[in-house]
Length: 114
Image: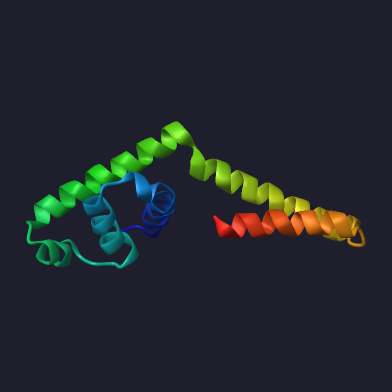
């Protein structure tokens, strides 16, 4: 499995997990996050490897469609980058401004809670 694809699917899963069925959540968690094989997942749930594979492929497609329509992951990453740039700029140019540094810290804390 490609590391890029794994990271992308894990990122999408992190944001859209609650929109999936329990079975989809279980399969994706085991396959992508816990690195279970299709056979191990099939054995765990008493289904065929093909059933697990089909479910995972459908769920990947669903996750990609959610992101295509909602852009939540892309927006989050863009906002995260802007906050980091802002934090660096404030640190370099306004490090003595307590109100500004407090606001930046609040933004970073909010980002970390997501």
